[in-house]
Image (cartoon, rainbow, N blue to C red; front, side, top):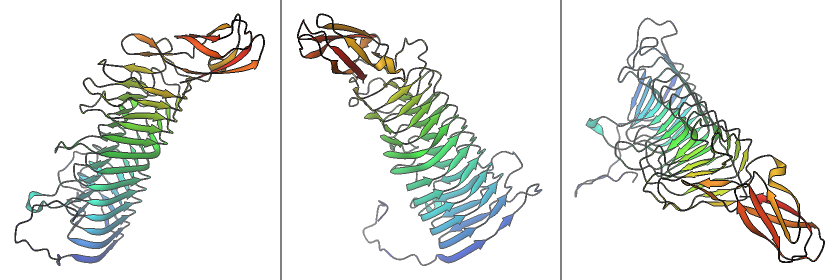
Length: 436
């Protein structure tokens, strides 16, 4: 069974027979622009299956630019199975564009346009008189929300197996997408622009049960007035996402794997990625790999740890940080600002921190088996006081001279390192290359 209900000792399981089946609503129109009269609720389904709603046009359950009206939604679906809503348009809706509640399953909302609703779509609790089940197998695709009163696409702490594909939220009055239901939610090629707060907000609901994981693949999160993605889920998987011009930072998360994404001009103070700063939950593992960072105004990625929580070491691999402006941080590319000294140091591998070719590779000629190299590409980490990183410096002899010896790195300090040979008579020319 889908649900873990308490069952009486003599309970019997039977098939519910009072469903209305095989219904198609085609081309329903309620009101038009310039309406004088408001409707209360456009379409309401309860205990239905195999329903198709196509080309519905629902405008005006509130005054133009008016206040929200509790319950005055466009489409309400409760305890329904196999429902498709295709090419619906809802505008000036006092409550939800589409609300999903109860034991609803296999619901598809596609090719819809929602404008000026409280929430464009929402997974909600059912009324107390029949408070059984929760929505699952929900697909919302190719749909647009604009100028919602609160979050554009919303899931309260009910519902499972929810997927958004090619959905866009513009100019929401709260968050572009908000997820409070547990289990796994997927956003595939979705975008949120110009949200009042976060492009995507992932937060535990009133039950206090922490969300397991959210998967975000593709899409754009930009010009949001707080974060691109703000998550306290145990794990947020983010891949191939474009983040730019988000006010606080691109990502604030309690645990994440961030891969193959791009970051540009995020965060006036925090940089591209913050770790645990906006959450009050224990943080988990954190991996940043294969991303490109452009022109961000401050530290980035800025990895900041919530006090009193100790994850596994963070991992930074195959990143490129390009043309960054590290205002006030003396060229610090990676800042690990710790509120406690017990957090493990990060693991770093094959990271490139700018496009100044001369700063991260070059030639040095040994004199008496020694060469000192000055390079702005040798950075530091900050955990209250500066300390040297351990950059990976590859050494290749290009012009052997003198008595050859084995090459090694003797000293590394911010902005400089020393190459040495085991032979004092080694005067070879050496190609050096730095990664992190």
